[in-house]
Structures are given as C-alpha cells and as structure tokens.
Amino acid sequence: MFFLRKPKIGLALGGGSARGLAHIGVLKVLQENNIKIDLISGSSMGALIGGLYALYPDYKILLEKTNEFINSELFQQIDFKKFKQQNTDLFGNLKQKIKDTFTFIKMTQTTSLIDYKNFERIFILLFGDKKFEDTRIPFSCIAVDLVSGENIIFKKGLLYKAIMASCAIPAVFPYITYDRYILVDGGISINVPIELVKNDGADRVIASVVSAKIKKVYSFENSFQIINRAQEITKNQLLKKTINNADLLLDINLLDYEWLDFEKYDELILKGIDETKRNIEKIKKLNKGFIFKNPFKR
Image 1 (spheres, rainbow, N blue to C red):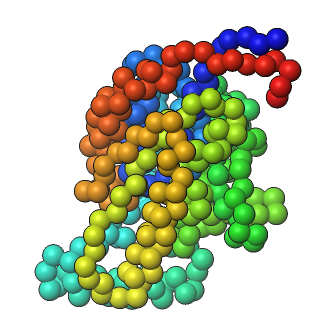
Image 2 (cartoon, one colour):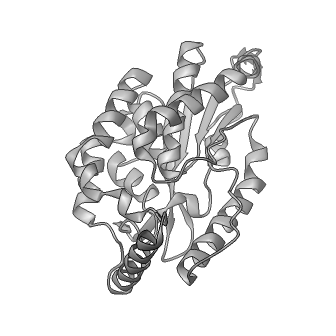
C-alpha cells in the first residue's frame, strides 16, 4: 500500500563565521511565506543559527537571541577586531607586522588564541542546558575529530557542547573534548551539510551558502597569510563539489564582508533576505506536490 504526503523540506546551513548571520534573513523570509522547515542541519555558524531556530522556530526570537549574543559582554571580550588586517598606512603596516609576530608566537605556545572558558560561556548563554531532544524542529550538526580525521554527527546530547565543537575554528577557538573525540570546526570537511539533512529524512533540500566565492588576492606578506589562503581554497573546492546536491541553492553573495564582521549583522541579514526573496517562487514550488510513500519501507 502507498499513500501521499507533503514533501519534507530540509534546510542545510553553511559555515562562514559572521557571514553566517545572513541565514537569519533566509529564515525570516521562509517563515513569512509559510514555508515549513521539517529538518535543519548546520555546520559551524550554520550550526549555531540552525540550532537556535530549531529550538525556537521564530525568526523574531532568533534575532533577539543573536543580538543578545553579539552584544554580550562575553562576546565583546573576545575582541575580534584584533584579528583584522588593517594596513592603511606605514605605521598601521608596521603595527600589523608586530601583531602578526606576537600572534604567531602565541600560536606556537598555546592550542588556541581564544580562552576556552569564555568560549564555552557564550554557548551556555545561548543554549543553556537544552538538548537536541528539546528542539521543536529535528536538528543535527557536524564537527571534525582530530584523532581519527572523521566527521562526527550530533543528533543527541547537550546542544551547546555540540554546536560549540562545530564552531571551533582550529587555532582560533579551542578544540572541544567530547567523549573520546577531540573536535574542531565542521566546516573543515563539510561546510554545507546537505547529505546530512537528506539522511535525516528530507525529501527536498534548500542549502543556504554564505561562502561559495572567494576574493582574488594578488600579494602575500608572510607565510601565515599563504597558509590561510591555501586552506580557504581547499574549503572552497570541497564546497563546490557538494552544493550541487541541493534541490535549491541560496548562494548569498558576501564577498564584501569578512568572516569577522559581526558588527555588520544588520547588513548581513538583509543580504540573506534579498537572496531568499529572489528565489521564493522556486522555493514555493519545492514545497508543492506530494511524495509517494511506502509505509513498509524505512
């Protein structure tokens, strides 16, 4: 026997640090157009935004939580501005070189530039003691295990711990020990977890991507910049191979924004809104029709 049902819509949210705030705009437009999201999966910043929305499926609450997060004293203490390149003049250039030298020395002496306790407190502020089982929309996220090199998928347990691991950019943020794993940013291997949300049961997948393109760079001042650039290219090539597996791609153009531009969250959200509005008719078509389902087949 077969029966008809509405297709399950899955949403895969990609990583991109501050640029991932554009996902809020995506969720706003989807909600305003009554597009029901049945499953969410996220990587890195996509895990943070996805986890919050899965827990509180209302973009107004999501926006409120995000504002609270960015403007919190804990977040401000991190001072992301110190990681930005500011070579506006000769003095600024010299100052940056000194800063790069101290950063490099610190990286050889510690495992991360950000303190573990402050990093953890931010995620506890956002998620408290909530678990995956508490979400109103089924949610999953991904991190990478430094021990085995394998992707670790989270679907149960404490939300803050798993999402913290998914956001742990190597060397910048502390790695997360969890069970037998040593975990870092899921975006290293799968920046947009399309297959993950499919495996969770989505019939059709919308992928929101905030890092599909990279800027051209014509000069490098030190080996540190070259290593970062090589990693950026590797991630971008891996991303290109996976995003075509989505039924609909929201490719949000954020080339003019840096991964640390958290203070520009209003602009980033608007970018997400614009891209989703451009594609809303296609999204509505995805949401139409029925799926033939065999109740005896898992």
